[in-house]
Length: 204
Image (cartoon, rainbow, N blue to C red; front, side, top):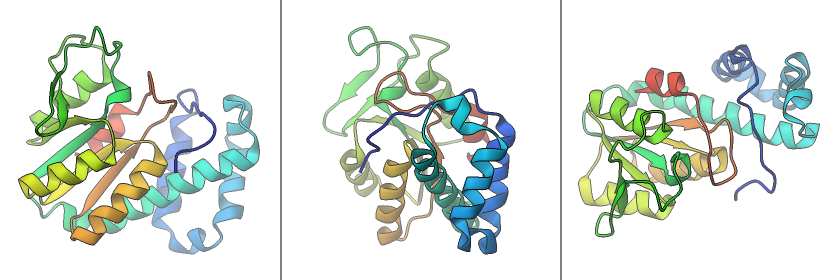
């Protein structure tokens, strides 16, 4: 389920996200997750920066930690794979649907970036993915991902999405025995969303 609220972590210090990664590597901290996350939120004043109430922040940050824990757990199997796909959400496109030059192929089903805007997140991520040997898809939802993976027999997948979507995708990949890596959005809202491009580079 998607959140019933929007968040924007783009102004939050990158040190906060590094602390999340450290927390994810420490399973003892994860057992005391509520206390650890509340401490992180207060330490970096995330509630003041984002304007979200503490309960909503705890929900998001708990999901971010969960995603990082699964990334760490899946990493050894992931790096052994060769045939990989990168999935990007259509909400990352800079231009509106009418002016975006991405080509949609319903038989796949996916959009494919046409590099119409240099500073578009999708354009940047597509180029980065291809440079690293990934097939790149711009999808409207999780059901598209299942179809694409089954049609192409991918060994691994990387996804950029909001935390709830990443958690659903990870569960689906786990059923297939396919290792995945997730890069969460730093700003949600279904349009003009954002993520950290450096985080994607490290994952790829």
